[in-house]
Length: 130
Image (cartoon, rainbow, N blue to C red; front, top):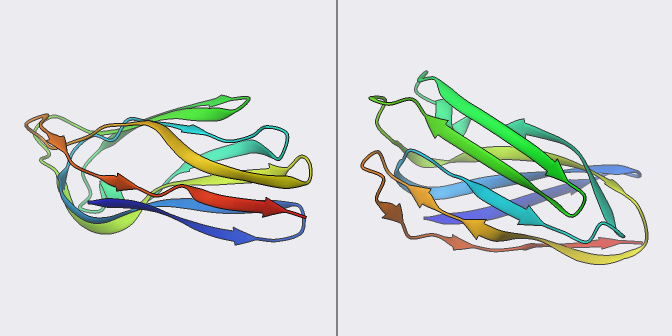
């Protein structure tokens, strides 16, 4: 399982998709993201379609912090896990200053429906604001 970031930008704000690739029975995905608040401000966290891709109910909670976010996506008990590739969340950022930063996972624990840890490689997104 891999988590990758897909960055698209316009003049003053940008979306960053947090995608999962080749997931096997993903059931819960709590995560904490960090970035430099001198460069970026998190405006919004939107739930992506992956965890509810089969129509199952998903609980979702996002707490914005000055330098990051705490996000939890959980499928309801009995729903089983999701397999495949897709977007977990989309983060809307606004530039706050010039410079570079990484949007990186400081905490990440992916689990299956048996609450067993799923090994995951998470690549930080490198952001340059000019």
